[in-house]
Image 1 (cartoon, helix red, strand yellow):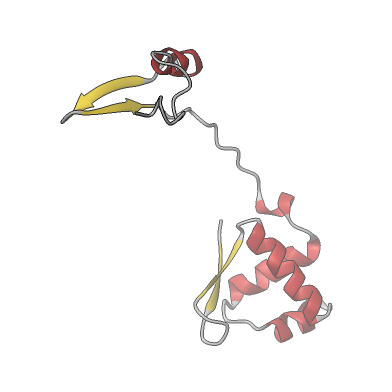
Image 2: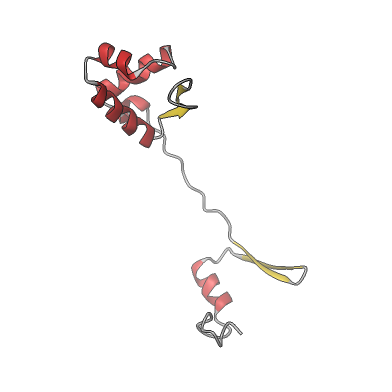
Length: 115
């Protein structure tokens, strides 16, 4: 049926194609279902120090949030000496990098620094 609706390119080519790309793949039949298992590739995790990834202002922001995880952008602006808009931009960059996360709502929530 798949061949007739052009979901299959060619008969008998699938397993050999899979094995040519993933020679460690395993095939198994369970309860009349054909299963292909792919082994996860070992990925070496590269870790960097947070200080290597952030600017000076971002480091100060992280330090202040570590001291007080309910600190406001207004308070951060006064401590760091930059505008609230720049504080928000830096926070957005830190969140994008996965270093900073907001837990809960804007009012009543808190910040969490990921190590």
